Length: 111
Length: 112
Image 1 (tube, rainbow over the protein chains, first blue to last red):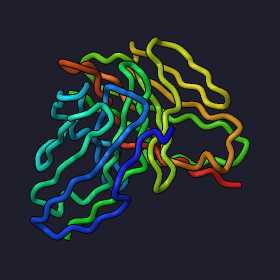
Image 2: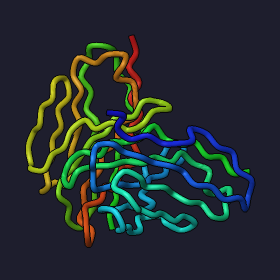
Image 3: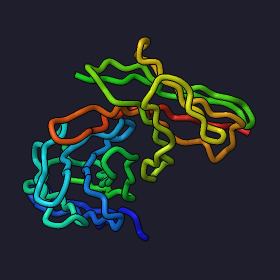
């Protein structure tokens, strides 16, 4: 049981490039989330999903897109990377009312 | 809207007791959670208060008072490994699920 896995661990992008951050969970959780964490700050919710085919915006969705074609996978897409998107990105999953389980994070730098 | 306030940093020595406070302004929420995050690591769940009062889990306890818009995390018998950042988070309803709104975190440094 691997829990929540994320790839890549690190990535450097040039301004205007695009990339997809991968997230997979093997706990059969319906609920999945993407957060970003800037240095010395708390986590901000980007997007979330309550099940396959259903996604919704969080607090800071601009510049990102998501999809949820299966229960296990919840990729986050950056289309036109900007320096303001330099951050650590965490994916999490949960059952309906339970604690959230976080992946190890992806450190993204946009230069 | 919702906002949560925590002290930015707390220091203590091994074996001591420390309390990390969380005050919030939110228009309705289900409960208050606490997460621990070591440097470079992912947040991990510590405790959840759905009701007012004290919840105890080993050396950690968490308290919630909705009437005072206040909660705290109490860490006893501090160990060096407790040095980490601690985040409170309120669970708030959204139109099709619940969401967590996180505070900015408290960095705890434990000294020998």
